[in-house]
Image 1 (cartoon, rainbow, N blue to C red):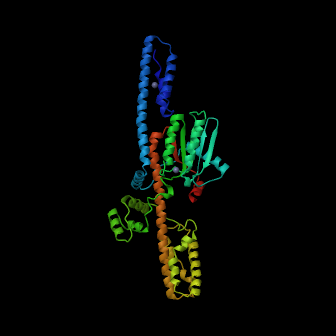
Image 2 (cartoon, rainbow, N blue to C red; image 1 turned 120 degrees about the horizontal axis):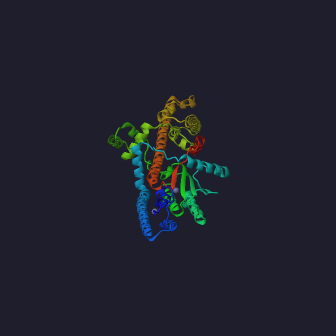
Image 3 (cartoon, rainbow, N blue to C red; image 1 turned 90 degrees about the vertical axis):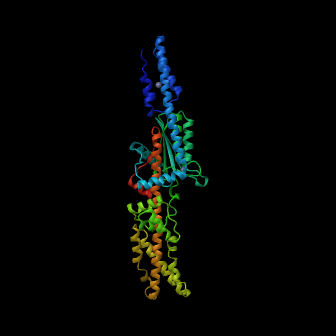
Length: 437
Ligand SMILES: [Zn+2]
Ligand SMILES: [Zn+2]
């Protein structure tokens, strides 16, 4: 009689996309059970043996396929572990695309789980916008939540390190089931660069290991795209207003380099960085506030030059003028610093500010003019600084998004069976709170 091979094939092999991989020993023992269920004569046994061998051959092919894919997977992972190269790759990608594109949100079903767990954690521990992680092991009858954990940067510990350790302990200590699911929440996407193995790579490798050892699927959800180093990304560090101005006034890299050479202390940016800035300048909404948080010291330091005008005055007079000037600069801050405006509008705001009215009766016309001029020069420098600051932040944000997207795109083709990773879409109010952080 014919051995029903499909019984073996469907659940164990053809279906392996959705099932955890079984060891060859397990597959063979289940085959033997199958053989035992069909008492046969000796010639049939030979056929069965042939079938069995064919099946083992089929198994070998699959494992060979897996080996190749495992090799490609680990090559992909180690290419990302080479930070310098990956940063270059992501920048090229960002320039090529113009901006980060593509959807990396988790699908609705997985996102819903995260939102439910998040609500439970928030109810118990309060809302938290800073980086932290928690995790959940979802069993058939039970849900195990652990965390939140926080990074200890002085010890080089990221919150994901603790998550990995806790998850391993839980999986090892218990009678695991293949139906279990691991959910890892982390406020910032796991880092792609640090002194030791980055968290993103650790987690992806662990997800693979947990799948192989326990048949457990892992879900990783995050709110903000951290990229390699988050806000500490150094790629755009050197871009100042001088570069931005040159890029604005030129149409290609050659002209830009020429323009930069004619300015003092301006090292031209590489072509990819220039392209990224150029694209940002032409395509994005570039309104920004001068001060996001009130730092008076920082604000006042921009206007030192206006103060120096009184240096030659007698001590008593100097003190009165200085107080009046401080009050005027503070008034300008209160009036103009919080509004989100374009670069040009911020410049206009400074020009229109009636500084002279503060001094009108006591100060000579000539001194008023001198003061107004100094104030406007200080104002312009401050706006230029803040503008460059804002652009660097914007570029970093786009770059970090692009890094996470590219990483996920690269690994998902190897890990699709056991790893879901993506951003969690919170409600608008929720996101506003996160972005204010
Ligand atoms: Zn088989
Ligand atoms: Zn990390």
